Amino acid sequence: MSLETVRRPVNHAVLIQVDGVRYRPHPGFALQQRMGSVSIRALLRRATSSFALLPARCVLCGAPGLRELDLCAGCRADLPCNDSACATCALPLPTPAAACGACLRRPPPFAAAFTAFRYAFPIDQMVQRLKFGGDLAVGRVLGGLLREALPADWPTIDLVVPMPLARGRLGGRGCNQAQELARAMPWRLDVEALRRVRETMPQTDLDARARRANVRGAFLAGDAVRDRSVVLIDDVITTGATVRAATAALLAAGAREVRVVALARAARRDE
Image (cartoon, rainbow, N blue to C red):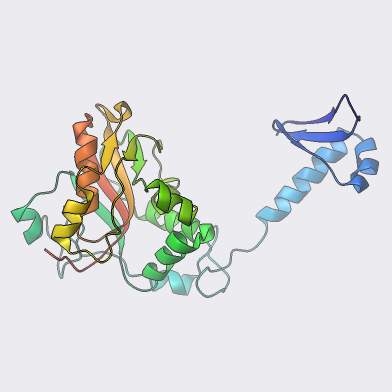
């Protein structure tokens, strides 16, 4: 941590600069400032360490959380893990399979999809809190859970790309839920590699055919993905129309391979 005292040439007000960012201290700080930068550094370290000691609290029930995770053991155990699924599109199945019937009839353009959970309680409510409520604390929990669940046997990944939001929706929500999840991933993040170039209707009330038409041609990828193995991050896969369209754009830009990682998969497929 770099810390120094800075004086403005005009009014000589004392400013404190920490790692290049300048702060104006409270007037009561003057006495402590005269004690020297060693005391200032000690105070800052003591303050930041006190934040680290705050106990984790479950974002669902408020009980004490697990170590470094704002989720308690009971709520963690109740999460609907997607343990039995299609290995190609992550659709929940009674028994695991290399490909479900829909993937056999119409193989997706991505190499594989993985989701940590089924889109069911309480994951659905947590996604809504992040997506429409801007609850970044929930976003950090969901990102940590997704990273924790990632397959250990995947090949080398060069780049992680979040599903982009249209500008209007991003402005209304204040955050891109896919980007918040992508921050937790262990690969290099590029938020500019994939752009949404056409406004689309919300997918929620559309059937599978309408969803495919709605997102066709909606994405454009840049040169950063050329010859790269890419992971595309989204929050929820429903019919798969959006991730198929985004994957097609990534492959058209020269991506070597695209794998999809999403937090949750809806069980219903309106084919």
